[in-house]
Amino acid sequence: MAAQFGRRLRRGATTTAVAAAAVAALSASQAPGITHATTGDSQGASDVTPPPGTPVTGNSPYYTDLPPLNTPGKPGTSVDLPATGTAEAGIPATVLAAYKQAEQTIAASDPGCHVPWQLLAAIGKVESGQARGGKVDADGTTFSPILGPVLNGVGFANISDTDNGAFDGDSTHDRAVGPMQFIPSTWATWGQDANGDGRKDPNNIYDAALAAGRYLCAGDRDLGVTSHLDRAILGYNHSQEYLRTVLSWFEYYKRGTHEVPDGAGVLPDTSGPDSFPAGAETLPSPSPTPPGTPGTTPPPAKPGGGTKPTTPPTTPPTTPPPTTTPPSPIARIERAGAAELTAMAGRDFAEKATVRVKNAAGRTVAKQPVRFEIVGDTDARFAGGKTSTVAATGADGTVAAPVIKAGEKTGTFTVRASVVGRTLPPVSFTGTVVPRAADAIRRTSHEVRTAAPGAEFAQAVELKATYKGSAAEGVPVTATLIKSAEDPTANDKGPYFKDAEDKPVRTLTDLTTRADGLLTLPKIFADGQTGTFLLRLTTAGGGTVTIELKVVAPETPTTPPATPPATPSTPASPAA
Image (cartoon, rainbow, N blue to C red; front, side, top):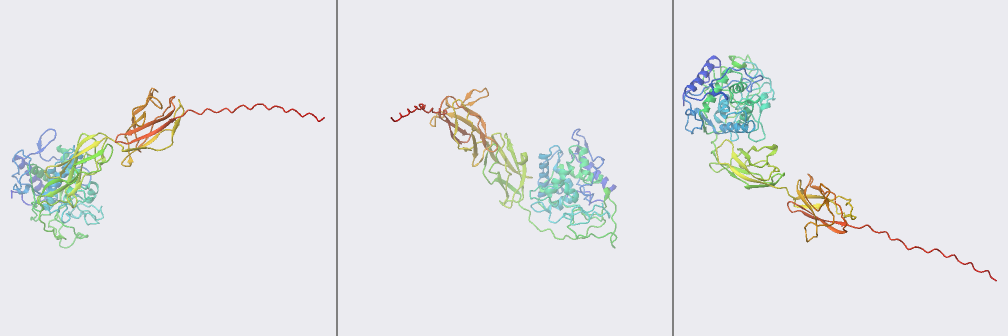
């Protein structure tokens, strides 16, 4: 093992001086410095004022081991080292994957923050020893809860319970929880569900790493700027010593790291009389030892409002971590569904891009985050207008991308699926957006439309277009007054529409159905011709309907024959 600066050191001037010496030593060994985003100047931690508010950890204790002086990489390198590299540079596989996933997720949603995964690794190192050397399950959850001391004001900050003991098991006071040591009140604000299991779990390294990254980026910070970086770290723990310790590990990890199996990470040294293995505790009984109990010694004060006990905790783990065999590394991602996806403009894709993740032994891998990205020159999007999203594989190792909605721009695009935190060839799917169409169009009323020569058809013609039985919105429709059922060319006589200049036209091509699939035709007029005429409507997609229009001359009233006037009767002659 490479030389270290000894066991976990006391807080105060001693550790501050050694941490500063470590940064200087790393620089002397040609390790990269903290580079200012604009000037390029290399410098150590700056003395800046911590941001206001309660720190993420409640100023709980942390590991103060420092990185070795012989840094893991060569000057200027940034590539990962092989598994045979310096032991302290090895980060457990699942923990490392969580840090890298958090960096990628934040880069997609907040690209101006520039949070590097090595910074998350540095904080994870001092807060939990990389989740106690990688003692996490395949989903990234610690085998037993990681808890800091009770923040009851006795040697530590006094923070009353904020979560009813839900995360820390203490319904009286809060305790820092998980791989990144969030106090429950801070987790309530910044907690994340990064592994897609529907829970925001501070004991899950994926959730905790993303939450830490989100917090570090708060307030539009650009972590490439030294002052922003320093204030972000101090917001985690209000201590200049803490800042210098984190920066020393940040510099060290930037020199190079390598992946080691889960459970095989290097644990911080807790053998000294002043050691407090923050993060080595399991969930205790609800009632902590009250102050003044015989046999206890009040711990010395610590910078930032807390203290560090002089003896290690005596509470044994309630459940010993199970002995597990590290899983085989992820070997490939493969298609588990159709390679081609097709949808009409404005509609949801019925098919989903589905993949399967397998390890080197050929077994499927559950709960593995997979990133889906839409690449191409269309406006197809996931929900919320997103072009990128992350989802975790299920028990069978498969995961489907969320539903994709086609935009109005037709053409092809690619859905690319890749395993988060692993460098593996991605899987691609071809998506195609076709124009809007309707496979059927019908009249909403079968009443015969009639008009007199030279008059207007009084009743409007309304139709409804559908596609596979559903209303077809925005579908182009062509209306033509045709010569006959056998000759679909435009007629040169009979009913007609009017254009913008009130001139007769017998073909309309700029008609479009409404959201409900309905279409109401413009007014139709009759010329001097009488008879039965045909109006045919066709849609993109093949829907067709033909309607009869009748032009009937009004009936001429019949004049009844004149009745001749009555002839007066001749009175009979009187009888003789």
